[in-house]
Image (tube, rainbow, N blue to C red; front, side):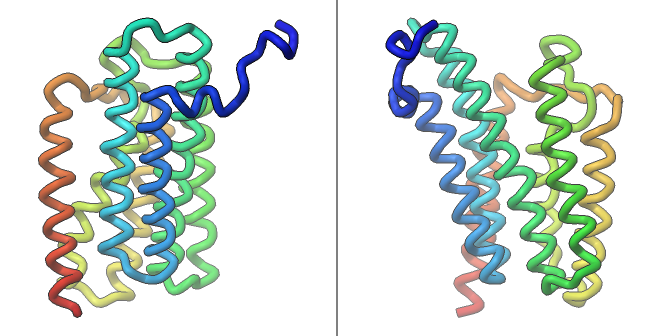
Amino acid sequence: MNEKQQPGMLAFAKDLPNICSLTGLLSALIGIYFAIAGNFEAAIIGVLWAVLFDWYDGIIARKLKGRTKVQGVFGAQLDSMIDIVSFGILPAIILLSYGNYNVWFIPGAFVIIATSAIRLSYFNVYGLIDKKTYKGLALDNNVLILAFLFLFENLLEHSTFSIVIYILLMLLSALNLSSIPTPKFGGKWIYALVFYVIVLTFVFSWIMYNRL
């Protein structure tokens, strides 16, 4: 295909599933901003909505009629790039920031980002084991579990909780790269995810409000 036949890059930005993906990227960016600022409740809200938009871009893509093969391939690549930010870089920054940027937290942050890059590259090559099964734990599960853990942050000292999230994220990274078959949640599970994201958004917003 010569250059004249190739669509412009911004032509793909008008594709509805890609708009959804980019909205998820914006959510992740907001999460990164607040993680760096030390507002972890807001950071968690950001990553939760990044997960929700990540689920919905695929749903929208499957329901849209008339999308070309090129649009599908581009959308899949865009989604993968955004997943590295949402489920690799963002949780790594949460870990670093919560650990007060102590040098001992750098290896953990590297493991999280490297794991996301390796897993997503592997998935882009091999895909699912079958239509309903992943090899290893999907990356979005990491931040959903991390969000739940942050509900209990106030029960522990800051330094203790930083070690807890460090250990949790390392265990999850090991599961991400494992060969353990895990289910691919879809279908009606989207309603459970919407409920989870909305409830935790209200909970963490309430926590922030009471700290004002």
